[in-house]
Image 1 (cartoon, rainbow, N blue to C red):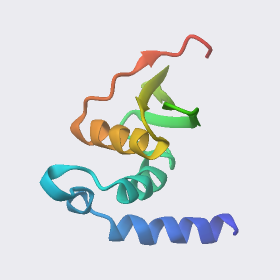
Image 2: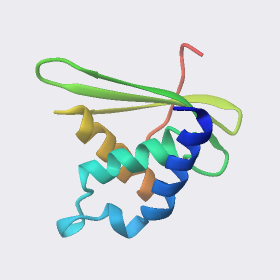
Image 3: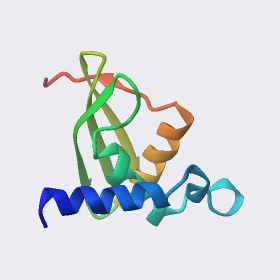
Length: 111
């Protein structure tokens, strides 16, 4: 796919996914929708005003998974770490924390 096609797909998903779509039964974030949301907004570099996502990594072993999100927040390189049982849950947790404005960012020691 070309960037133009990728951007068109992202725009379609972005217009179809609303904040209300992220809420599942009893306010839990639906994991599949969280993945789409993550790819459309967060991985696209748009966490929030003053924040630019530089990249992310997902890793999983037999018992645990970790998501690391690297960002430039108002000129300071930061990282966020999320751990859970699966990579999908890591993404869902990050999306929920981002939505609620409670992501814990740390100075990137390797920047």
